Image 1 (cartoon, rainbow, N blue to C red):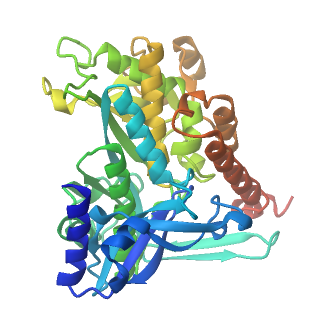
Image 2: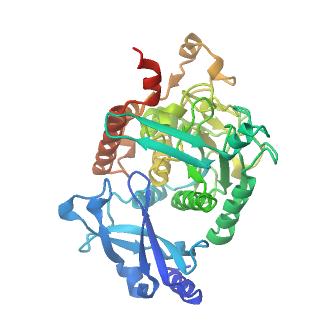
Image 3: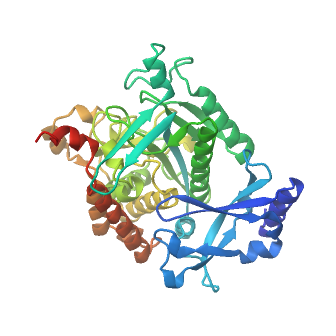
Length: 473
C-alpha cells in the first residue's frame, strides 16, 4: 500500500466510524507512552503531511531544552485503529519532528529504530524479532512514597493471593506455570486482552498463559515481525494490557521484580537475521549441535561480547537487577547453549530441519525497556559480531549453570551480567562504538544521564527492608 492510499484509508476509518477524536501517541526516550487528543475533523490529507505542532518537547524527559521546545507530531496513518473501550476515538502512533521544518527529532526512539532497519538494509540484511512479554496483574498496589528521607512502603493485593487467604485454591511459590482453571484466576482477563489485540489491533496471537510466579503473572505471545513493527506492537500490547486490567479494577505492571522470593518479569527476545533475498543466515542444516550457522555464531558472539553494555538498554531500571539473580530462571551468566534457560543466549531446538524457525533467544531483556532502542541495540550487536567475526566459541555447557560453583564457571570462562544499573551504565560508556552508526552520541549521552539520575534518586531513599534490618542497630 503506498503512502497516499494509507492516508486515505486512515481518513476513511475516521469518517466511516463517525470518530470525533484521534489519540496521537508517541514514545519518549525511556520507553513511556504519551498522548494528545485532537478533534478528528482536523485530520485532512495535508495534516498527515504537515503534522500537528502541539508538543512542548521540554516537558518530555530527555527530549529538548526550554529554548528549543516547539515540536511537531506527524501521524503514522497505517497505525490507525479504533479504541474499543473509547467509542468515537481512533488511536494513531506518531513520529516526532523538530519545529520550523527541522526534520525528524534525533531522540525519537521510533526514528532510531527506523535508522537501524535502514543500516541493516545497506548491509544486505533483514531482521525479525519475537519478544515474550511477561507482566503481573494485581487487584491493587498501595504505595506510600513519603517526603525524601522518610522512607517508602507498599502492599500488593492479588486475586490469587485472596483465594489463598480464603482457604481456597492456591498457587505455591514458583508453581504458577500453566495451572488449569479454577486455580488460574486470570484466564478470563487474558482472553479479553487477546481478543482486543486480535480483533481491534490486528495482532496475530500465538499463546497466552499464566507464568511461573505465585500470583498474577501472565504472558502473551504474538507473532514475530520486523524491528519497527514489533516495537510498535509491543507498545500497543502494553497499552492494551494496562487498559483492560484497569477496566476490571485491576492494575497491570511490567515491573521486573515487584515481589520478593518469586520469579520476576522478563521479556525473552527471539532474534533472527535474514538476507534480503530470503535466506535465514542463522540456519545451517548440517550443524549437528543446533542447526546454527557460522554467521549465527558470529551474531551470538556479538551479543555476548556486548552483553554488559546492552544491559543498560535491555534491562534499564534499578529494579531490573532485582530480577537478574540466580535461582529464578533469569539470566546471570554470559554463556550460550541450546535449550538451556540458565544461559543468557539459547538456541531453541523445538523443531528440526525448519529454516524459518532458526533464531537465537536473548534472555536478558525485560519489558521496562524501550523496545525501539532495545531491538536496535540487539541488532547492532549481532551485526557487529558478524562484521568482526566474533566467534563465541563452542557452547561450553549444556547443564544448569546456576548449580555450578564459581571455580567451575571461571574454568569455563563464563562471565556475568552487571549486578546493578550503575554497573551496566559504566559498561555502556566503555562499549558504545558498535551502536554509533545508529545511536548518535547525543542520544546515548542523554540516555545515560537520565539513567544515572534515576540511580541517584532511588539510592537516596531508605528501603523498607533496611528499616527491618537496621532499625534496632
